[in-house]
Length: 283
Image (cartoon, rainbow, N blue to C red):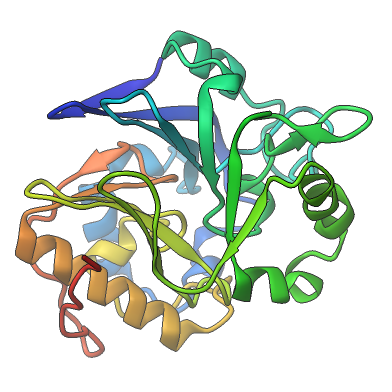
């Protein structure tokens, strides 16, 4: 069932599209992590490891409903049985049922922010035969840098995702930080992919919907460690440590796609040899 948080008139809902094991041993995903690092991470997020020591992921999207009814969906999950993620993720996903349980019809969604073009984040964006946007009235936002890197990231998504969104004039490309609706901002968090972005609900109780800026609790206890799937580990580390420090300084909340619990608040500022100075959130 969806997990919801309310901040004033704004409702944030975590929608779990599926759950399953990562496609490779977690030690390969984080090759520089020590046994002590893993022990600290497992203590922080025990739901992310099974009895065999395998990495268990949740695959979440987040719906943000403003007081005026406008609804933004952050990411589009693993998708139906024939989705681009079918080769490795536990499809079919359950996003339609999760949306219904949250009282959200696909036609109610006014914008969809795709944090990046990995297949477990775009699965329900475009579906069916012929391919059509699953959210018929939504504007789909993608970073220009991510669009420009599609042939490196996944060239099949040009026909499967980009072309159908262009055909219905629902694709909007943004360059860097961008204002969305009300207190929502798209913030550029490159590194995991060239045009990775996150979504900030700004205000006295800020919430950052992180996409894959943060994929495992290991990156909370040792945020300087590289993740093998990052396109640019140095840029990813700067994005991650900067925003973790920003949230810690402001008492903010993380909304994460893959950790055991969808919402968490920083308990301290990140540390490590590459911890960045906090960047200020866009105003």
